Amino acid sequence: MRYEIHNPEQAKEDLKGALRILQRDGWTQGKFKCADGKFCVQGAILAAVGVQRIGPNGYDAAEADFYPKQKRFHDANKLLMNHLDLGYFQTSADWNDDADRTFEDVRAALTAASA
Image 1 (spheres, rainbow, N blue to C red):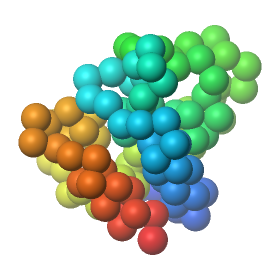
Image 2: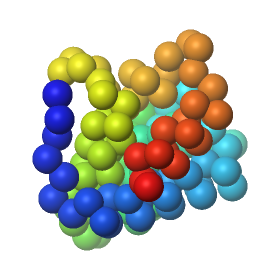
Image 3: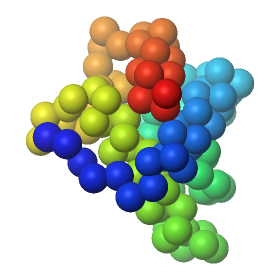
Image 4: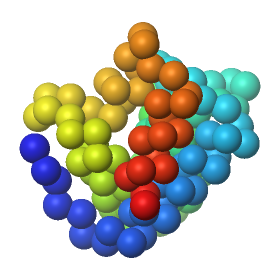
């Protein structure tokens, strides 16, 4: 399944930002953000688009200017999912949390999807 990306150039920049965040703060599985500051792929994309209040299980939609950030998140996430060629019922979170996934896999996917 291919997802429509409304602003591909911004989505590429947001994926590059997510990779910088993961390289700086660390990568994790199973949580958007851990207490030690590490992010999963989706958490890093949220942070890259400017969402400030990210916790282990999600984000605070009451945050100011959330909805424009949410649109950017969805575009960047869809761009990554298109690159990964995930099926209809698969998400980037499922891909991130696969037991065999490594940070090198994540780095390579974000780099390729944002090229």
